[in-house]
Length: 222
Image (cartoon, rainbow, N blue to C red; front, side, top):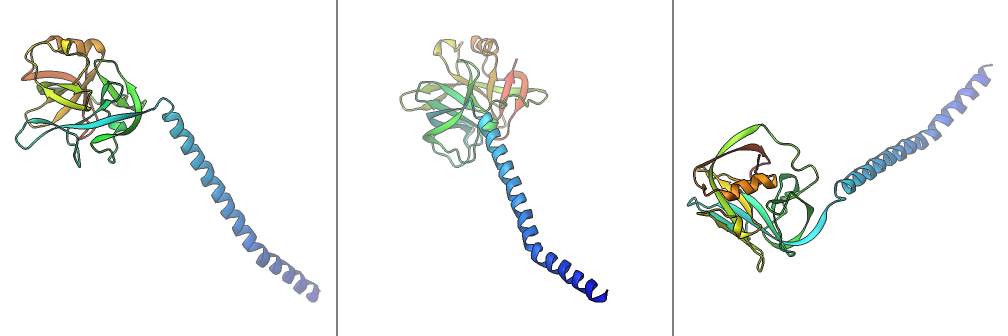
């Protein structure tokens, strides 16, 4: 009996020793398979998020306040502290929404990808959910500035209009506060038409919902 028990224990021990590496390999393979599955799910989600994305040639411009308090338009910058705007080769201009903004996005001509949302009086380069996460309504006081695009070179000229600006054709608007903050204006077509129809440009109070971050603030007006 003792010899039989010893032999049995030896067989069990040998089985455990020789099976351990195989078991570890199986765990590793299972872990790798799970990771590959997660990677495929992430890739599929990205593809779904970008299904409506367009790839376009555009010039990226930063609209921000300089040290003297003047609103400037820059196609060369390291960091944009105002609002990013793209002027595309097919003659449209759009604000770069927070979720479409990339830290790698610099000024000048380049290829950009995103979804053009909105309307001809206020396109926004956005992901599908870029305008969904709005905060509470707030009031912003400042000067309304027209951003007139030059489609020949892709630049944008900030102009404070002294009369209704609808006759200038499709263009974007921002509001510049006394503290130097810049908010891109966005909203329904009727809301933007209402802004274009007024001659009031300075010391204007606008109520709307704010979304974004420094370098990509958007004021969504009603």
